[in-house]
Length: 264
Length: 326
Image (cartoon, rainbow over all chains, first blue to last red):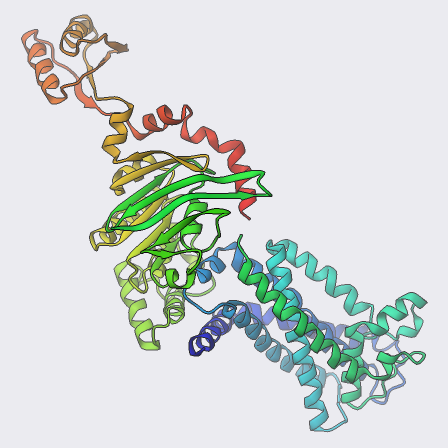
């Protein structure tokens, strides 16, 4: 058990060390979300009537936060697939280390990277006028939600990475999954304008419930998500929490089992 | 004592469609080097992966240091070192980072990991490159670092899967030197290679495998003898060809083969026949341009054992199998 923890720490440290050795990775994984903040804030922000005090950026920031942590799914999967391709996973598996340490370490590494990215984005958001009004406690809770959501998704990423194996395919699969999920949601525009069928999807979409939950926690009226009386848009916090628990309960054991039985 | 034993290993992919190993058995005596020689797709990597606990065979049995690799993989992992076809290290990190990380994963303490990393970098002539990312290393340097990573806990049993594939001649020579030093240090080594010369250089014993099974086994000398004895080969001036041919025929007692100015014939007595020929040539005042005993190369061995040349088998089955491995 003592070794299991130290194995996980070693693997996590390896990933952080990568960021030190190749700082470009960190730069580019933060540039994209910052660019999104600026684009949406200044390109669309002017023409979208948000009806919020403080303007569109108040609604936008939670959306971009969620979108960014959702991409953890892809980045975990890509990182794992690359390690596999290079034979690094084989080497790890030939070592007397605890089962699961390699993938648990990876999810931790990606989670820590997420913290950094969220800090950078929050700073960028603040610079363009985003102001949470709910107080430090609820704001922190929102970030905790974001962090855990990203962590849960990164376990799906593990399963995708182990199943697809080819980094480039993984990248495509990652985008194929995360783009519709993040755009078929209330993240950037109200769901009310969508066709009926899409509305249902968008309302139950975990991205929407997360966005709605964050908006609520940041002290906004939950207006972009709320249509009709759908349960998830009425109870975004509970729904999001439920999603996160379900994701982890399902995907952590699945991924660990897949890794243990994995033989290329 | 046998350090490595594989018995009747069978491994198929795609529901039996691709047979990677077909009843393969081999063993390695403690402290010796077994060279597993075969073309691409013969099953070399699959064998190593099973012995190194990375892959479970469909059937068969294998032990490393007396421990069952299927039932007790964790125990086996503590004893072996594995270095594969690709340099399986983190390319974004430096050589030093990698070795320290692997030291930690072998559960050496922090300082012992650092000391061991420095020691190995020094030993493999990588000290200068220690602080550079692996990405910047040459092929030979990567392989040496990869090998170093497999030596962190001084394993008694080492698996090297095609350690020099893709290296330039210089890199290959360096690698051979490193491996020879290891062997002197007493490790038991199972080495796969598609280079006949490499098996000849490094291995005490050679197992030739083709299509997932061992087709011949023995020392390099024994294998060569199996294919046929030595041949006397002599090259003379054009004017002397006829006379020399007569002498060679008399000494060998067999018919000669002529290729331009080079005459060859099988001989049983080796160096005695060589001396006899030289004396006869001298008496006849013929000065050979070149004379020697030629033993069959391992290429000849492969050809006579399998009926096909090693490299030619690569095309179809190998591709299929490689696909199957993924």
